[in-house]
Image 1 (cartoon, helix red, strand yellow):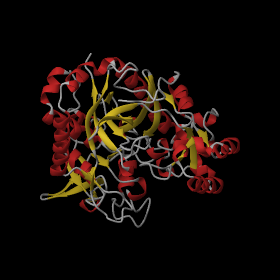
Image 2 (cartoon, one colour):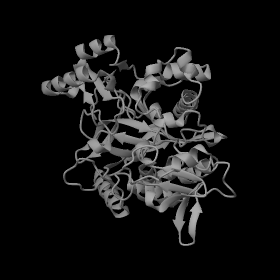
Image 3 (tube, helix red, strand yellow):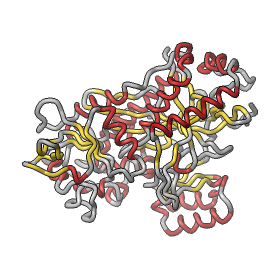
Image 4 (cartoon, rainbow, N blue to C red):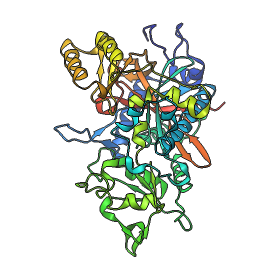
Length: 475
């Protein structure tokens, strides 16, 4: 397999032999018939289609549900490599929660001059309705997805923090189930840490954040926008796996100061609501008055301590890519420590000098919307045409506050299976973090997303990317 020396190949060393974490798997792989692997790949696709693991792409004129392509070659991470990653993620999540509490209370970080006041006050994701509100247990980000990229054996960078409603965990779980089904002999040969405990851990973690109004075992529910949402499969999957109720806004109402769900025996109070709808739509009395997805008055119940919302309203400011650029300062301010995991160097286009640099070097940079997600609204300079570069120059000049820019990193590669054999493709990783008052749990592995197009750095499923099972070895 030919690979450019500019990229770190996670499976193979420069001499063609396997790296340590892949040694046992590589020994197995060499003995496998390529035809059998292709058959297993087709079998995996059939399993995913049978299970109904699909998603919608907004703006797709066909409105067709799609499968996320699944590659049967796993990504393997050594246990010792994972230790550093988990320490860095835990440090980061603690700092994010402290930051969120601070900006909705005393704003000490602003007073200290570590984050400019306008980055908070003028931020569309900052919710004045959360000022002075402390969520049950002091937890704002109950579920976090931290996107990581790798550039070398010991070089991991945080690409972004997903602190609102990180998606994709159902694919992590289904990918593992599929691999266990198709290659059971592999898991007796290679000792891989389990991810199957995630739904139980999610239920326990959410229950540990129940409000004071809770009596007895907490009632947990998942709030979905409904069957037409692109991630509906995941909403239903997680509710089922947790043993929680799956509800829509019209199933809920405020009754006697509590948020209650409709049942065959009348309305029953909910203690913890894992909401998969955006802030703007959660309460038409407090936010978007036209919303049909939320519950009128739920924010009043929340502020009074009658329900836990996971994640807390207003956490979206921690997703902001301009705030992301201050994360080294945020970590040091709240923990007194240097960041264990590095940020990608980031240019804030709202700053005149940074904007000039970005415009002068646009063809070499990746430009992203500060509130963007899913790979939409971004420019990958080295892959862009002259027309695309010109269009983005105009966008930057018109609305510089809406963008940040970063260097194009040499993302690591992991092989995928093709009809012609193995071929290297770029990957990222989204580990999932559960936060409660008494612990932080990080599932060993997470969702590896892979750019299936040769040379592409865009791994998002909405942009044609696929997924892999991620193995963290027991050591």
